[in-house]
Length: 169
Image 1: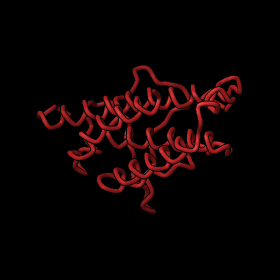
Image 2 (image 1 turned 135 degrees about the vertical axis):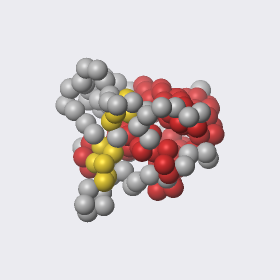
Image 3 (image 1 turned 120 degrees about the vertical axis):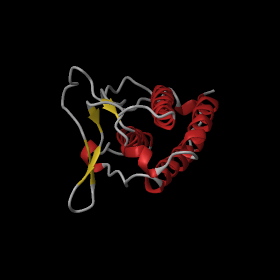
Image 4 (image 1 turned 180 degrees about the horizontal axis):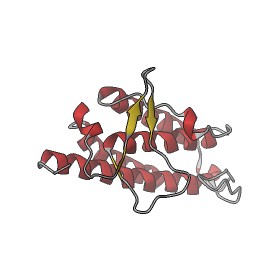
């Protein structure tokens, strides 16, 4: 069931990935936005706050794609039994095809990790994002990742559609 749910969410994501243009990533749909910013050395840094601001900034497609890649990378670390990397250790590759290829690569890594699991592994304890509570299980981590993917896909899709429809920045 978890694999079916993931595949469904990913198929909805592909609809938008196939249509995203590089300029969609940096489009700011509101005055208060979180995005990614390119440093002089060419690396990209996402906007971030230690505590959620009020009001919450509207994320751009760039920020959402970084966020998706960040939590997915850390979830992969956990499923593989590795120490989860820090947020700042997850590099966003940039708008357009680099980000899309990165996300598709994470999907391939995720599927490979899931294929190595058996049903008997699902109740095994694993540190769970973001709490790190060892009472959580691999099955729950996968269900959480599916929910995060669905949420991020919906947000990216809505931003793409809003920009395509002539949304006001």
